[in-house]
Image (cartoon, rainbow, N blue to C red):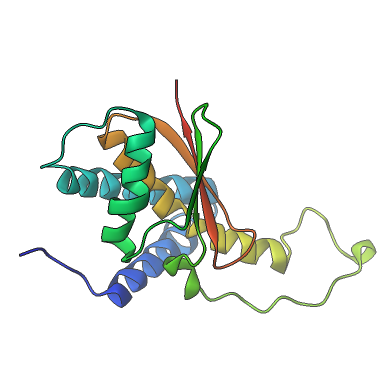
Length: 177
């Protein structure tokens, strides 16, 4: 019998983890908070990938492994497959999830009206930048999960995320040579 965790518990845990690392533990060092959150995701992805591939033969190439992530691995995590996979056939893959569940419940502060640039210090964080930074902090964990899963499959890579149209999210995987 497999172990399962309620989806709301998982989402709550991720929200709390991101909040703790970005506002309490490393409030003045967002880069360090991001690295820690991604490292936790990496360990989770590594362990989940090992669990899900124990009875599976090794993948022949990068594309097979990426397809496994998009179909089987994503289905285990989110009960759905990745909506779209694109590649340039040179080691870059874009995994598109049109309704990424972990972004649907993130509280986004209502954005203020435009401010007069002459009365504003450009180096000071604006509410727009703060909301974008808060949302992007939540993406380090799933980026780490993807990187850890692929690392477990013998594929070193870098993973980044793009959230230009919430709650849609694109994960860009760049295979390291």
